[in-house]
Image 1 (cartoon, helix red, strand yellow):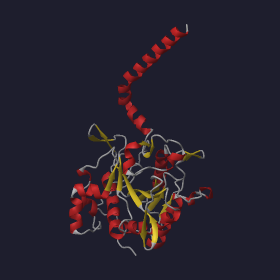
Image 2 (tube, one colour; image 1 turned 90 degrees about the vertical axis):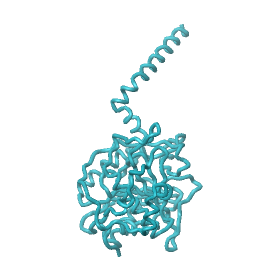
Image 3 (cartoon, one colour; image 1 turned 60 degrees about the horizontal axis):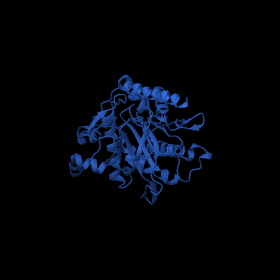
Image 4 (cartoon, helix red, strand yellow; image 1 turned 120 degrees about the vertical axis):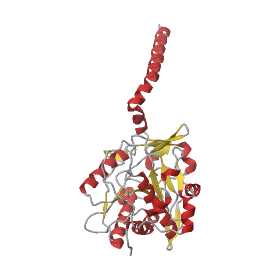
Length: 356
């Protein structure tokens, strides 16, 4: 009796499996592929350590890329008015530097770390156009011009005591950046410290971008004066590494810009991710390229290569959007705080016609 029952159950299991496989093409045509990938966008963690503890940080070290998964986001829609960014300001570089940067191979190898799941195409960036884009804004302390927020609100540093509050982690670094931009450069900043990486008091990084997107959209509707969005993070790297440089006698955490280009490699081709639209990809890339190039002029060694990811993050609301990684979990809080002075100076020079 048991053998007959077992055979019947096996037959039903095989039948169920066949039915599932036959239904997959229809499922994918109906948007099932989006549902599947929505569970793995866009932060990164090792396949073999999907615990809450392992979700504390993203991994962006190139040699680790083949061994990571991603999680993520069903992004919300927000209509931002079109902006013409070709103006008089732009970023000045020498003719020699410009010629080097116009060489696509040189640009890719010297300015970018590219996730193996995506590609940077030659048509993505016209260097002359990117460096000539005018990202300048009019500074004021009367209404916010810059929004700083943290999709991963609980990201901390090696010596952070998070029992004392969010100020011990990346939120404290965001507050430092806000203070410098306001006090030294006269740019009003709204610092959003809402928690997006926890649900009901429990850390939950999966879905953080789904939660931060609506939060950012609400703020932008409430404060239409905002022209710059900065999602401030700290990176996640192997514990044996430290990302530091010395600037003006202070040990500073290195900084990295992240771009999501909404494109995945498939069968040797780079294909757009249709449900992750971002009409500002060109401007996002130009904004981060100007910041990186200016950093190289002012503070050599301060910035790591810009990191290109297949997805979108929260970069699609406006042209002046940036995801910035300040150091990593192996840096001290003070090293991250020290990095805000040079970062603020770079941002101010890109955003203002004249800087103090």
